[in-house]
Picture 1 (cartoon, helix red, strand yellow):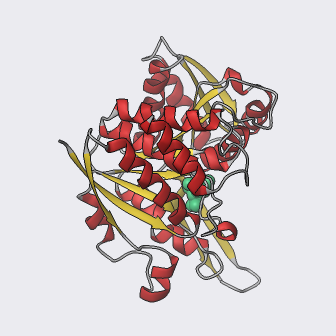
Picture 2: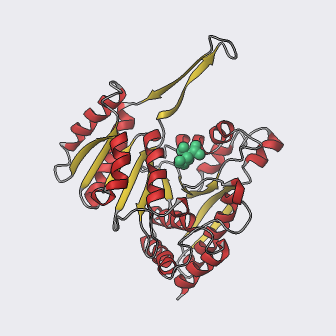
Picture 3: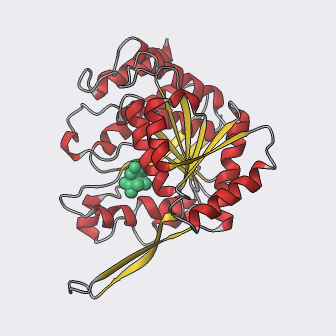
Length: 347
Ligand code: IPM
Ligand code: MN
């Protein structure tokens, strides 16, 4: 039997609650099909308070040897500023392992009523995950003075833009054949015009994919007014971040939004995490919705080559939601939802 070595970083807040739930489901899904070894790392804001850093200096090298990384959530702003915790753990992992494709599916699960009238949308958002507005290039001068200056520069490289768009075109080809590239090239005349140009160049290689160019503002409206018209959506790091919270909202809430940080060439491990974050206000109360985290397990199984088990996990989630389990905040506990998914898996 195949054994996968998984690194777990439950992190902060409900990251811990939903990682427990996700691993219970993984255990049930694996039975008789494959084995897995998990190594859990306590890297979190609590760890920071004790050690002065979010992970050890050799943290990245430690993670490199695993088949995949599963992360719950990072952030506890009451004790560690988000700009410190995220730049000390989540963001360096995405960059160091070239997890350049952040894939986030947005569709309504069976039984879930979103806030829109629209039904039957199925959007795959592909967010550039290593550069752009999150490049970290910048600085501050004259701090605290009247003439203080803060500069943060977006970085768009040809290699970076080309590879995320190519990834998007491949996904579109394997789905409904439509790609929407999101920029703001009417206002940002260097980086975003460049992105549009690269999109056009690649489009010539994919005559079977139809391409739309949209500006981020119009795209925000479209995701509310006509999400059923969208298939694959490719966006820069910041635009993708914003659109995927909107995507989460239209699919019923952040409790349903899964994500995969993929290194497509497999030169380093990929990382799987729910989109929702650490939600300190509901941490440890057994009320967080674990569905986004469990769906992220399904994405991990897909990446590991366990497509059948992945599909079984997703069907089990939908068997539970179709019965009304976990479809609204506060309706069921974390444990109840997890148990319902496991029952469906074992049925
Ligand atoms: C996400 C999160 C992160 C991001 C934050 C926590 C840095 O919002 O994964 O969407 O912006 O990438
Ligand atoms: Mn986000």
